[in-house]
Image (cartoon, rainbow, N blue to C red; front, side, top):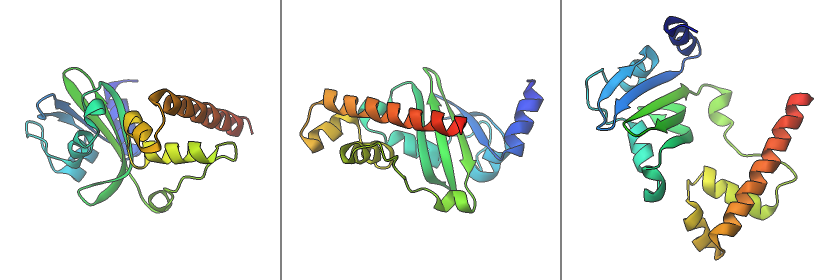
Length: 166
């Protein structure tokens, strides 16, 4: 896929994308991002994407990799947001939510999840609580929480695989 084709897909799907330096300077952005954030290339970004990223627990804040946030607000626009942190930059990618997507944010647990797994899943995804913090709150070891998370992932993956084959 050529760069123009890629940018057209982002525009057609109304996906905003912004590339920031490690210092928070806007390096590149597409039109969707510019329209929602109102920052320009060369500006210092002070947008909500960075605010959500900085609110992560200190142990996760500096970790390289992908960080996702569902149903967040960027300048009055509800969005699903994904931030990828590398050594020298951040890439923010978001999809504005409209209609049913905005209101359909409740988690419906597969029948196979235990009450404890549902509790941990919600703590991790909705409240963004770290494994260490969950372990302290529930008075169990970090290894126990990681085991629960591994079990949740297996069950949810199996449910998704089953849905794909139906």
